[in-house]
Picture (cartoon, rainbow over the protein chains, first blue to last red):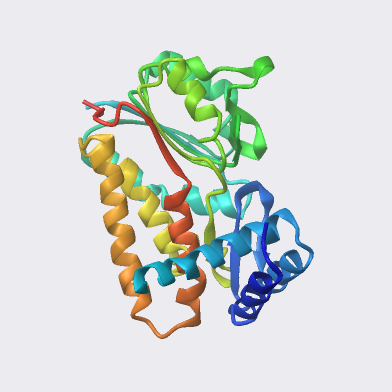
Length: 66
Length: 217
């Protein structure tokens, strides 16, 4: 379950993703920047996974600094 | 020398990427004098897989393809390996080392195979992610964004084929991941930020079950 603040952080980061890049998640499909933003905004399974992965990555920095 | 079987479906972008980047694995297999059986494109079917396993008795099997928790697919999503009741054939992995570059199969298929006698199975319990360039889809081997995803995952079968234990091969992949992370983090690039979380995710969801000291010899 993701918080609203976490979604907003990830949406802000996704807005910087180059348009040429595409995330492939096997049979779930491939998603460019605009599709990823849609998925996160819709709180879909893909959107929740994307937030989980990005936030997990950002938190790992906090652990290293702390 | 060992029998090595590899599936190489190419019916969509993702399978095309995985199969193209598998050429490096096949090259190592040949350099190490292993006998390579390739199930390429439309030949990556369940029937061909089962026939080849029965005939060649491969010591090491590498799957490229889509997957879910109970299945790995080959060409055009035909299931080639399954632990689902109606279609199960996981016992075909008995005695083998298996590396599956496929989503989700680490969750149920992998333990089912090990329980059925598979010696060691390396897979992924959730989605295996790849970031790629839309502009490079026609030439996957020229895609610098996708390169680290495929090269890191290639380390596992490459070092198994070179005679390392599964544990050592996985460690080699993790060392390559560390180097890629270090290189990416020193770049002033928006791309690095979008690649790193998914490289680390693939390691996080990787599962190794069975005898980690197993080798192909």
